[in-house]
Image (cartoon, rainbow, N blue to C red; front, side):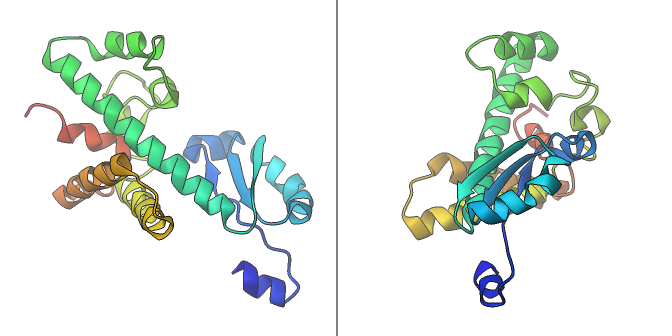
Length: 191
């Protein structure tokens, strides 16, 4: 698309976002921008109305690459957090207490801060809303697939990304594709 825009003398940037629906509503999205710095400077006033973190990732396509890398990490983090919480709950731990312990310890990360996969731990998280809203399992599966395709193209090794993709694929095939991706914890819990 960038090549076609350049041939037509039209400025073009790719600017995928992170921050979810909550970030869009709050105007706190993070933009990962690919394209020329000059074109980004022209677009910046518009982007700043929707978010404050605007990163110039590089040339055309770099924003998309940054997005798939970010989402691959998020998918891996969510499954890792879900696995740890499922193990703790199987041993009788309160998921709210365990989440707080991990959040304030070496396991702390954005997903623990903002997006707990256990219903009732965070009232604002999709898990507490029947896994409705948020970022769908099928969308995460798509992004993990894009990351794996890209990894194959550039001969990068991404075994955790591949495993995460397989787990989200199984979760989707079980009929959970429309649910928020944090519902993947269901794969890991005792029946």
